[in-house]
Amino acid sequence: MSRRFNVAVWAVACSLSLAPAGAALASDAPPALAAPAQAASASAGPAGSTAPLDASAAPAQAATPATGAAPVTGPAESQPAVAPQPAATPSAVAEQGPMVGYVKHTKPPVLIDSTPGKAAFALVGTVAEIAAGHDIVVNNDITDPSGDMAREIAAAYAAAHGAKVASSPLLDDHLWTLAKGSDLAAQSNGARYVVDVEPPGLNLIYFSFDWTHFDLMFMDRVRIIDTSNGTVVAKARCFLKSQKTPAALTHSELLADNAAKLKQLIASKSQSCVDLLKTGLKL
Picture 1 (cartoon, one colour):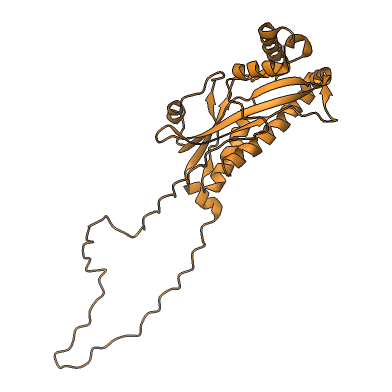
Picture 2 (cartoon, one colour; picture 1 turned 90 degrees about the horizontal axis):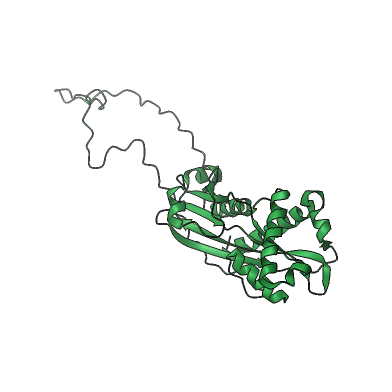
């Protein structure tokens, strides 16, 4: 089976839209967050109300003697100096701003393990690649990186708009489909915006002219949801194709020591994708 056909089937299996070859992302710029409301002055009364007169509080007026003599006045009392109030710090402003939540996907990621032997059997080989990838993920405790990616993007989004990040994520168990924006809005825990990075598409794949060494193809998408109406207000995507480098490892090297090198590769690709997604969101 040709490598192009194999990658195409993999893309369908992961339910992600591929960017054109060499393309990194496509995006919509996020809107500015609403500024926090100004606190009302503590001394102001209700709108339209008139404070009752208090004889004890009103300044006493000196009576003018009937003889026409000038009223006797005492020395003016000095008023205590009022210390200037410090300006609000950026962190204090952020605490008053809207909250940005983020999603953590709870299911293991989908990994396609493409080897020359499996690729020779067309669709049957693709099923075998998915099954082998699942075994690699489960047997080596490989976790979905999208939650950490979403938190980093949420922090950047909040910093750019004077907001704060939620202290804990929203949990979602969707893998092959997307959670509805309205559903995420319903469990937003007070967050005005929610950042959802999809579970990434991972393909461990060999090189065209070197079947003994492998790299990881990585693709993902992010959306930012306005919880006031459940709509997507910004989105971006990334696609990192495999690249042949002198540091490329063999299949067995990647899976040795509880897949330590594969985990490092996933972490590296995740960070590269986050950088592209933040650029796409203009953060």
